[in-house]
Length: 592
Image 1 (spheres, rainbow, N blue to C red):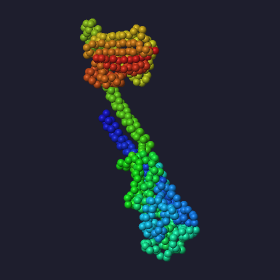
Image 2: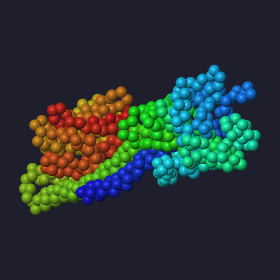
Image 3: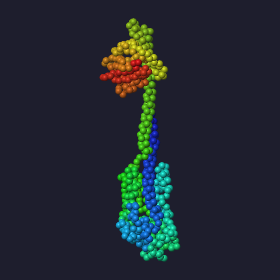
Image 4: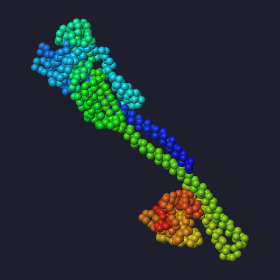
């Protein structure tokens, strides 16, 4: 059994290691999948913000250059009214000579206060806005490239659904990421703009402008450059494009209130979304004297997943960060949380049952070996006694009729004992092989009990027991007579065997009808059975392991045979200790 326990323990360890590794990897994969989905939805959130920015820039880059000029010939500029977006303060044009003009500043119309503050700052920055532009750098910063590259590799490694969708979304280039967005003005639009734009182009740069003043030959058509950003004081930014014509540069664009713009992005794309319940959004406007930050969503405490975005030019002054501490569990995690304990319980239960079965087989094997030894001894003892008394009679040792009668009674008793032992073994074998045929017929229980008394009378008197019965004479029900006699003999012999040292050597057999059942009980005043052994009392070859059973010989099939015979007749059997001592065996049979 020690070897079996060692092998079972080794098997559990060998099974637990790979299973633990599989479960750990499954949880890691689910964690990566949850983070991938979070990144995917974070990127989708930022993509929607970027799409609005791109739509704004596309609209402004396609706007006619003449829309920024003053009223002419009674025509009203489309930019003369108040901008629809609350975060757009107004539209401006910075001329090559440093003057500013905007559609609202004509006649009695005056620009709003915040726009006037912006214009005062832009007047001082006019030389910077008219500088010759250098080749356009790559739109994505190193920081943004690293973020996207790292996530791309992780998504490819995961092979997740979210990763596949994310890669697909990255393959669609944003309008802001396009390198070539400048254009030449059409001839008619260029003529109108030149007519509208202040003085006639000069051959040299105006006084006060930087040496790297933008220059384009007068023979070329005006050129529009992509939109750029110029930070202003008070959390504002000038989003503008350059119009290059002749040797002049004119800047056209709008003034953006960044705090309102960030609040607009937060309200439109984040607040009210499910992601706001577990993630925190942080929008930051950098490259300002005092950076502006807006935060919303769940509290952040040691985030486990972070998505960051630095938007392309001209919004490269804006950064977005989405972080979550506790990601919502995926359906796969909930299923795994349910399956792990269930599968673990099943495996442990299976291993426990295998161990119990192996241990039961081992114990049964030991009991079988003990049974062979016990049967050998039980057969040898009566045969020895029979042979000894027969030799004594043969040699004439019994000289008186009384001694001869005593020797013959002993021989007869030992012969009956040997016969019962053989009958028990044969009966047990037939029941094990399912070859025992039960002849069930309605008959009197009292008649069967009288036959038992006759068979055991000499043994009962010899051991000093009294056998009392409480059975109604008319109690009849279907049972197999031979089987019932065998049951009663085994139970009474068991009481005699273990009750030899009892103070009151009494055996009581009572039977009564209880509803549609017959209840039959055999009780004695012996030592009883330990409580933990009661459930195993009727097992094959089982003997209670205590000092009493070690002193008392037996084969261990008596009560096992009782249980098999009772079950064969459609009944039930159980054992219980009497109070204060003794054992009671209770059997129930069908009354009809």
